[in-house]
Length: 497
Image 1 (cartoon, rainbow, N blue to C red):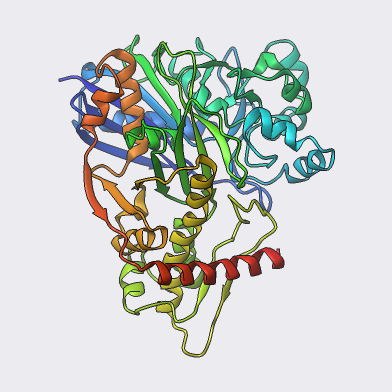
Image 2 (cartoon, helix red, strand yellow; image 1 turned 30 degrees about the horizontal axis):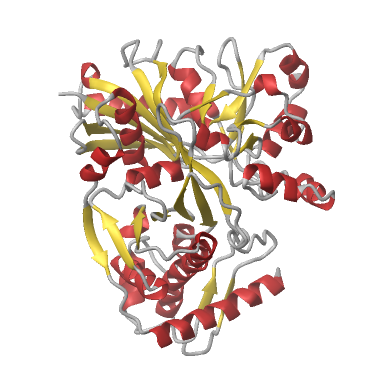
């Protein structure tokens, strides 16, 4: 038996999974690592803790008998995006903690650039807004904050990258310093047209070109293992993509207009725009979805994300104590027919797309003496679905076409009530796949494609399987009224922010 090993390096932990070359997920393991909060709004990770979680996962899949090391045909990597770090080229030793995508420490710098009027240029070249979310300002911070690093960078001693580049360097014994094009497109330093680092952007963010990785396709012969405990040398690393792009690939979203929503800590929606680099007039991001072997051009996507999705349920559990377990919310919310006028806009860390209001803060409104914990739980599920409607309708306007259905994945996609609410409020069918860990599936698909396990995306589309479809049942009039109430609540939050 041959198998594909996938490393899914996420924000709170690392999953290592095994897929057969027939597309069957054989199993997975997950190891969490500490979250570091040095100051309010700051989030860091210890890169060595990340690497340790990867090695633990690799050992565990073999110990559990999911496959043998000799069975592994190739390796795929998918990762938390935008998280940025520096390391020594010679030793691979990190030069401090990684700055996580959630971190807001560079907000003042980004606001300063906005006041200088450079955001239109940044958006035109990168498809991204000027925001601390992306990597460029994080690289600048690390270069300025760590003593002596800028001098070492000039001497060629420093490497910089996102998590995929760091893992690729560690897996190849430091021989490969590269990042795939989907991750590079999230840095605010890559030009979407040239698919290369942009000299003007490097200057704007004070990031020297020589510390950055080479930009490579998302699939193909990307590197070979060397000196990795538990793995033989010479295994091809043949697939890499940022987690959200990997999820779209794992959902077989290969056609223009195909869209997926991942319900995780936040909700992340990508829509395939083919070879068109879309400029969004509705506050969305344009990004690279992937680039396959032998293709000169990339496949692009529109992206919108709500910062708080599943995290809102965690807040009900940990902050308010309304539920004891995250999965209890479905039963509690289903105990009432509606939210009884309660609206919850979960802008607990600001509003993401299409509003981009980092100063906004969450609001629960419409409270009366008749409001109960069940109504707040119901309003939370409804908000998770409603904020996605805002994003998806903006995508349809930008692309000037109506999507046929929305494919969903992530932990909260198992919540049937949430999926039905999403279908009703969007007015489109929601389709859940057999395997909801689609970031893992995408990494395996890309890796398998890179070594010829599958010949093309047409073959991969036959591997993907649907589990359940949720048709829209709400009338047009009821949907219009519900969306109007939600919009009033969002406007109230934005005015407070």
